Length: 523
Image 1: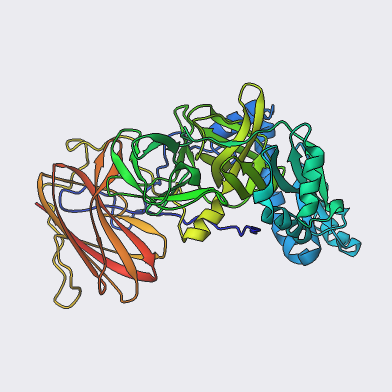
Image 2: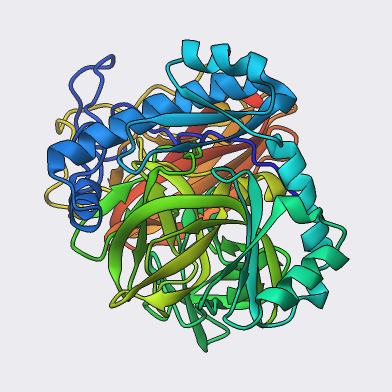
């Protein structure tokens, strides 16, 4: 199958503000704006976490200054490429960055279009085929994928040579050419090269945090999305149950595709809270702030529990890999190494999510090739929203009851709303505005301390919007959902009996755009 990628910008899960009442922490005035606190280790260098810069310096053999300059140049090239692709249309033949990341080359099928490329500051290269024609050639190979023998490792569009490359193991080159010809692909557009790659899915793995499938196989979290996380499809089939690395029940595979694709969505239960960060397994959390797709030649880093954070460059897109279990199309090819224990994990270009680990060949001793499933396709195919680091990180230190700032002893609870103002009543009332895919933490982006006993809340919103209300308790270094309710006819109500501790409410808009009123009380 032949899929074109559309860039999807990750939606920020925002929380802002201040607090009051029901033993709430004190605040610096009703209109004060808090300082956003990000996860530990996310202070950026040139807008990127220093851990990413360090990994790039190590694996790309760059100084830290060179790594930052490269990232800056790559961002500019990505912006330029977006404009040029729209201008060139069918004559666009692909683009790639030079080995040092400083030069963007754009292929054009019509020499008359070269001036547009030069005007944008890129280098034009005339080619015979536009990228759409190359994709069509590759689609013919994809359609014949079931007839590919195991000594054909895979195939991909190589824009730099304006051809579709078929990888054949030594001795299988001529057989690979016959297979390509039988598919109907024109011989002039296909280039067979010898390769010792033997790609395989990396089943026994964790890229981000580890999780177990049906109590047996181990994989890794790719990226957090509203309602759960995405990972590799070969990790589990739809309906498979997952537990976290801490052996706590976690969720269920709500959707999975493998082979053909290699993606899955795990819907987590109310004990888990998705966070917009990636564990680098070196004591830091790397922020995820979107999912803008990086071009061929861009630097990229992968995080995995077996080999830590490893970096390299994007070599090709729209690659097909012929795994023993079947072919997978639409993957991105890289020269980043990986080993069992890394599959399903996160790929970042700077702070932008790129994909989840599918499989590869080689290892991190001798080097290798690794493929990932682009994350934007997973988000689009499943109507998912990426959770980002902006405003949704758990506090760095657990708020203990005696350490949380309390309101003055003579603080009075807010006056109840006047009759007719709202259908919801409670000791504390907060309002907000949300659009689909966004979340807010209440009260005012912080937490409150409650004694053991009953708690109740009521959420009211305008007709047509679908909101979810969650009560979360701080436990194990993060806020965990202990009760959940969705709006019905514009109202959601929940009650819970809980232990003493720090709590907050999270309001998430599943659809629509609306104002809401939250009223809650705690014994």
